[in-house]
Structures are given as structure tokens and as C-alpha cells.
Image (cartoon, rainbow, N blue to C red; front, side, top):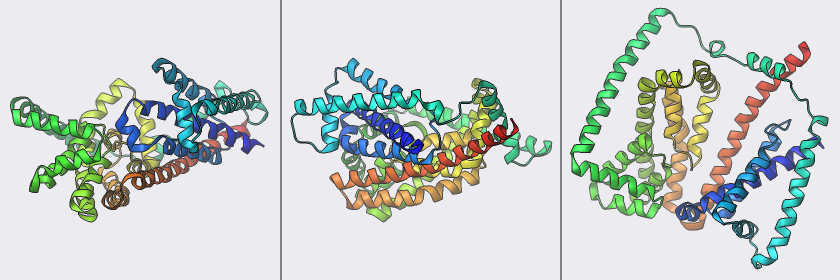
Length: 396
């Protein structure tokens, strides 16, 4: 019974999240055409079910109502309440008129809300609720960075600081030179603006035509675009990967995409390492950064793998985050190379051989696979915390 409750609650939460994401997609025709409303619903419904299967208790107990409320609020503000019915029709492949779908949709929403309200109201019967003191004890029992990493002596620490100071000077000088060139050289200014505008349209065919316009220099332009988008553009790199495969062939495109993405990842890591750590600690706290350190120390390689597999994640975020921690560069670089190689090959093959709906379906399946890996890591983190809770329960 407990598992069925979890399955129902988290699966319906996944459905609500699917509706919310689809409502956001309506703001961008490019994203909507690229992904497909039904595919989004299938992915997030499956994601919710996998969360339920991986968990032993109901955390985030108001998540369904918060997500549902956000979706409804967004629909009301934009006047798109009717779109819920269109999303349902496309997901279930229904050909009947919208007016006939409405009563069944409303009945489904009412039943789901009533059941989830009941699940929340009877939650204490099925799982223990922790007091503020118990949660504090759990927090204190969590692994600290010093439990995972060997101590370094003062001389090594001083040497590391000197290297980072030199790197900071080099990075600032490089950024300064680039900014001067960008604002003083008209051709560079115009060319970069056009490149980012092209990628921002999120249309693979437009990116392909843009790269082909450079002729033999397309390789250099593609490499540069991949590095630049890693540094400054929160745009999924798979657009360039698919374009490279279409232009140069899938295996040549894979080599180009992999090598340029590696260069971009290394540069992001370096920029964050030499510029960001001190600033972030001042803006947040050393305790907050230590929590991030612990996560990357334990799960960093897997997190990198997940984010590279997910087609909608900008990989530069992970590179910057890793650079802000004390994660070693070569550990990051090797994990990045191994993690992104299979995904780059697969995306290149998809870009070079599949088109249209088949391509979208394949990307969706890869997304679902990546989400399943994410669930596996979440379950491991959850199990670590549960072991700590059991220790506290026995002590008390």
C-alpha cells in the first residue's frame, strides 16, 4: 500500500510537471516544434514513476500542488487554459473534438487532486516525521569534505594559491584583450553577434546553412562556436553536434564535436577555478560551497555523465560548477571525455542518419535513459541519508 501511494503521488507529480513544461514550450515555437508536446508528457510521467520506484518515503510532499498551481497560474495569466486539452489530445493521440475531451479531463484532475490530498493528510500513518532537532542532527551527521579528502600541508596549500593567482592574472588579461577586440573590431563584433543569433534560433537547419556558408573554414567556425557557446551561451551544444554530423558525416562530425566540447569544458573549468571560488564564497558561504564540494567529490563524475546525456542541459554549467569546487582538473577532464564520448557519437549518428519524428523520438529515449541514471544517483544519495537517520533513531 505504501509503495502504491508513492507511485501514484510521484507519477501524477511527473504528469503535472509535464504540463508545466509544455505550457512553457508554448512561448517558443522553435522548442515546441523541436521536442513535441506528447513526448514531453511521456518523459516526465516516466520520470515521476521512476522517482516513486526509487524512494521509500514521500519527501517534497507539496510538490504536486506547487507544480500544478504554477501550471494553472501560467495558463490563466497567458489565457491558455484551453491548451491543457490540446496537450492531453496530443499525448493520448485522441482525434475527438476538444469539447468532448473537457469533461474527462476535469474528472481526471478532480480525482487526482482528491487522492493526493488524502495521501498528504494520512502521511503520518505511513512514515515518521522528524522534528527540527532531529533534522539538525541529520545535517550534522552528513559527510563533510574533510571526511572525503586527504589533508594537505601548508606548503602545498601556498603553492596552490600561487598557481591560482597566476592563472587569475592570465585569465583577466585574456578577458580584457578579448573585450577590447570585441568592441573595437567591427568584423569580430558583427560576426560573433550573428553567430550567437543563429544558434539562439534553435533550428538545426539554420545552423547547418550558416556553417556551410564558410566553405572550407566551416570546421574552424564550428570549433569556435562550440567553445564560445560553452563559455557564454546557455544553449544546448547538441544543436552544433547535429549540424556537424549533417555537414561532415557522422564520425567526422563526432570527432569535431567531441574535441571542441572538450576544449570548451576545460576553458570553463579554468575560468571558474581562477576567478570564481573566492567570489562565490564571499557571496554565499564556505559552508554552502563545501556542500557542493561534497556532492562533486562523491557523485561528480556521474553528474557530468548525466548532464552530457541530457540534450536540453547546457554543459558549461557543469564545467563552471566543477571549477568552483576543489575537484581536480584531470579527474574532471577525464570524466568529461569519457562521459561525453558515447553521447557525442550517438547524437552525431542521429544527426547524420535520422530526421524528423524519428530523430525527436530517439532524443526523447536518450533523455529518458539519462533521467533513469539521475534517479539512480538520487537513490544513492537518499540511501546515504536514510542510513544516517537509522543511526539517529537507534541512538534515541
